[in-house]
Amino acid sequence: MNNRWNRFVYRLWAPIYDAVLERLFRQGRRRAMERLGLQAGERVCLVGVGTGADLLYLPEGVTGIGVDLSEAMLAQAEDKLPIAGCEIELRIGDAQALPLDDESFDAVLLNLILSVVPDPALCMSEALRILRPGGRIVVFDKFLPDGTEPSLARRLSNLVSTRLGTDLNRRLGDILSELPCKVVHDEPSILGGMYRVVLLRT
Ligand SMILES: C[S@@+](CC[C@H](N)C(=O)[O-])C[C@H]1O[C@@H](n2cnc3c(N)ncnc32)[C@H](O)[C@@H]1O
Image 1 (cartoon, helix red, strand yellow):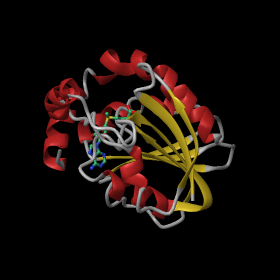
Image 2: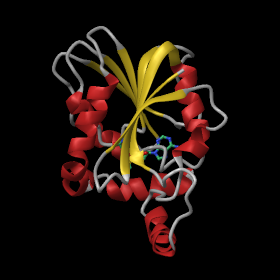
Image 3: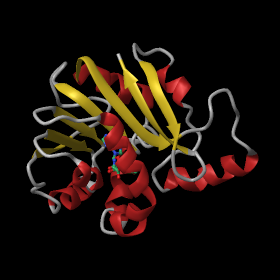
């Protein structure tokens, strides 16, 4: 997976993404937002905001910045603005080199992005950089269980899946192994727990 391919493939996804996937991910998104526990007055960054499906779940009084590599996906997100009671800004940017200041957010949402960016550990380290001390990160994504190897079927499926813009075979434990953060909550989500909702703190 690389940024060039991601830009290409998400330009194709952009017009159909919500129609195809909104229903599937709805429950996980709701739960991830609940776990993030945003309060009025807080600042949140949505990394790889995509079509902005998560923006619809933001509580009133929050300020948010959504960053994404794909102009086409961001154009879909733009169509969802304004969000009642929230101040939202959208920016083009790479999740692996966020165009954002250090320690400038109370919370970061990483929904369906660690399985997509070329280097998920770098993406997570950027999320930690922009997070204020004591802030929180929520991840909603699919992972291979830590310490396991993908089955042959999963490896074959991944050949297709990576071409569609997402990797089935990343392990959260590997991504976090060198990073200064800890998992404080981890719960199974959709598709029999293949997707998880995980809360992290520094
Ligand atoms: C599976 S979609 C998820 C979108 C959104 N987070 C959601 O939950 O629906 C992955 C998104 O990551 C974006 N993306 C891919 N590589 C990226 C990168 N290096 N930096 C920022 N965004 C990236 C894609 O353009 C796409 O919008």
